Image 1 (cartoon, helix red, strand yellow):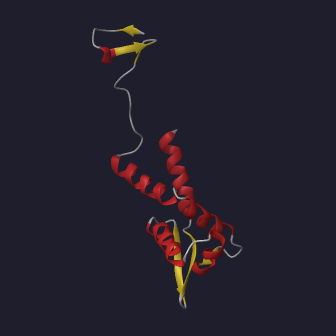
Image 2 (cartoon, one colour):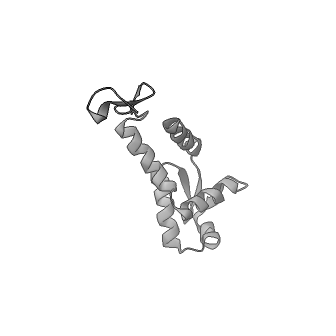
Image 3 (cartoon, helix red, strand yellow):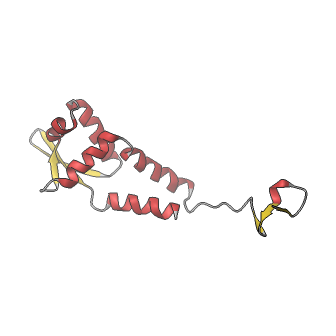
Length: 120
């Protein structure tokens, strides 16, 4: 390590400054929004739910159809669906007494692209 002056904050390696060069590709608001969306999918049950919807032949799944495969109660399923919906990752249509859910167009791809762009 070469020291350009007596202050350790100005140390350099191979002629490049070690400190003070960090920058973010995201504003604080963008980082907060991305974290909100990532938190919505950072749960094993919600990842299973997204997988169930994505693998549905019709592209949508009735809320009642999550109970068996995920082995959680209907109130728990409803909570997780609400989190995904509020994050804008899924959309639902009420039909009779049930809501049918589908992936929000492009939102998961957009989420993955945002994370990739922020960390490249």
